[in-house]
Image 1 (tube, rainbow, N blue to C red):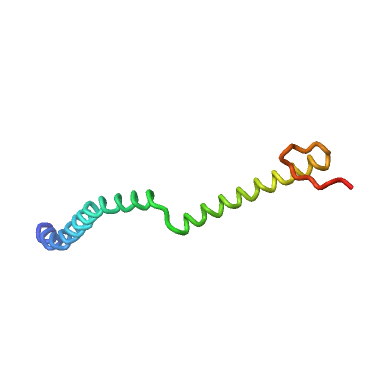
Image 2: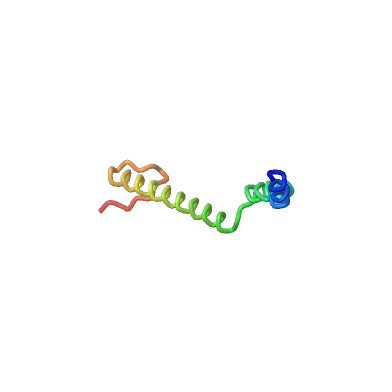
Length: 91
């Protein structure tokens, strides 16, 4: 009786095994493609990434110019300008 049940279930189970083997084969075949794709994506910069980087650089430069202007204003107020400072003439 057990033998009959085991033989009856064998085709059902073999489908699962074949399906699992097929999935594994597809995963193994697509793995190199996914790896190369990830490498190319990491090596290249999209336009939006480039725009974000440029925006960060412009903000950094703007902050630096602001720091330099505030330092120059302070030196002018303290009457200790550098030769390169452009200070308004005192009244």
